[in-house]
Image (tube, rainbow, N blue to C red):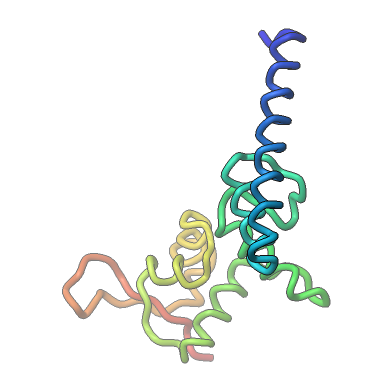
Length: 143
């Protein structure tokens, strides 16, 4: 059970970490002002101190996804199937394995495979991997 004293101790530790981080950032910012922002984000994420949830995350893929969603203010965030179809369109609808799709779209593996294998499987053509490797390859069905 968390006592008031242990809670206070935790908060003091966080404050000490924050003070060290800001001191390091200020020191390095004097030498390289442009790199200070990137460094600040990296150091803050490393210590798990979150000050701006929209811009700083612990996982870089989540940050990329958040940035991608913000880049489309008129339409808002894309659905999973739209993200995958757009990715295939950029690649001229070339065949791709599920691993390539996950890496290219930066989607969660479970979400991407759910779309490909079950939720929207009727939108994809499927074939065995011609290289003899295990797994299947996919591409969007031509209309």
